[in-house]
Amino acid sequence: MDTPKNLIIIIFGASGDLTSRKLMPAIFSLELQKFMPESYAVVGVGRTKMGDEEFREKIKSAILKYSSEKISDNNIVDRFTENLFYHSMDYDEVASYEDLKTYLIGLCPRYSVSHNFIYYFATPPNAFEEMAVNLAKAGMALHDNGFSRFIIEKPFGFDLESGKRLNKKLHEFIGEDQIFRIDHYLGKETVQNLLVTRFANGIFEPLWNRNYVHRVEITSAESIGVEDRGGYYDASGALRDMVQNHILQMVGMIAMEPPSSLDPDAIRNEVHKVFQSFQPITETDVLHNVIRGQYTESVIRGQRVPGYRNEKKVPENSRTETYVAMKFYINNWRWGGVPFYIRTGKRLPTRVTEVVIHFKQTPHHLFRREPGKYPGNQLIVRIQPDEGILFSFDMKEPGAGFNAKNVSMDFHYKDLANVRMPSAYERLLNDVMLGDSTLFARDDEVETAWKFLEPVQKAWLNNTSIKVYGYPAGTWGPEHADELFGNDGITWRHPCRNLTEDNDYCEL
Ligand code: BG6
Image (cartoon, rainbow, N blue to C red; front, top):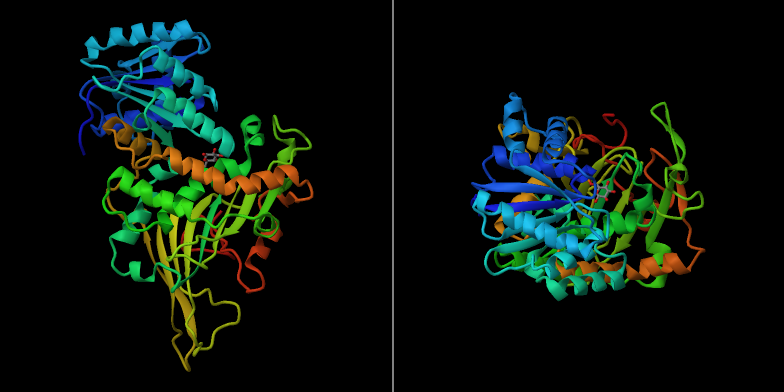
């Protein structure tokens, strides 16, 4: 791995949760693994007034609490925090960007940095638009003598129109090659492994198409509710929060053609082509192929949990979906006619994200099987937890006659000795420092994803007769989601936390 050039990372929203829980522990891990530059500083920026020492203490406790590293000596954390600084400013005040500039330029000689800046906007949604533009106007987006890179978190707009507007506004001052749009799913090892599974193994490619694949199923389930994010979530909902970005990016990885190289644009071009090939959703599709739901109060493992409408900052008549399931098609030579089923939701029975490739059945069933118990060949790529892969197939049940029984072969990342799974933020921050944008959403991908979902957003907004089904917290969502499969006698896989278990007996 290359070592990045000396630089300064500036985190806006430094007193917030993302900084404490994810960003600082990630930078700390990169430091321990010697992936940080020889010399660097991290400047936390926020509205809250705080001195450097107070900030360092805050980050120290955050690292001790949230870091996945085994920390045997607190001095290591102390040494790390010596290069952290805090600068408070009023984001709305244009002059304060000039002050920030003077402050940062003042730090450069001490860290032997020649105008290499990474700005991370860990601020509430949409605040970054103005901030990035103000930084650029203050002359802090220069990209010739050094680099200025801008890391932004979703949402990247609210719909097609606002997504386009945001890109246009940023592009007035900042080049696309300077913008790194975080989709933390792309930072997950297991999502990247989709590419390796497909393109490093000769056996899968011949089967990976409409001739052999019956359907593709993606589940991204969470057991938690909206917690204290009701204000943000109610204006977003599952479609914007999970489908437009994380789930479609996974679809891109599963469905793309082999890229010609690992060049960032070679990969992103292929993902974008998949997005461009989505069969447009019609109004009838929204009625029949898209199901939305909202969790209601329930008792989970003996504990009463509130319904969505009783969560903090959620209006009591909210129609925001906390669950969405969809069936759609990709109109190209590889996937024509193969249905893709996706679903995501909060307050489902467990936290699990997985991709299931269901292969077509044999044309003629020779062997006796228990009715309804034949799932066919499946390749399950487990994104989280119990990261790994499982392949299921039939074999002969020992004994008289010829009874076929479904069995599986599985690989679990946790069985690899001495391998640590880096957090998504570690990988992504490291890539930004090296200027590698492969695992970041590009402007055109974001816009095409919005375009695909626009008919759903419009129909939900305009047609109030489209139902929001209630589902008791702790269940697999509205039963209507099963209707997406028609009368084929198939349904969703009901995964457990543990990859090798499903349906009846789950580890809690
Ligand atoms: C975020 C969403 O992008 O992803 C959250 O805003 C969601 O609502 C989270 O909980 C899920 O991420 P993960 O990595 O826990 O699956």
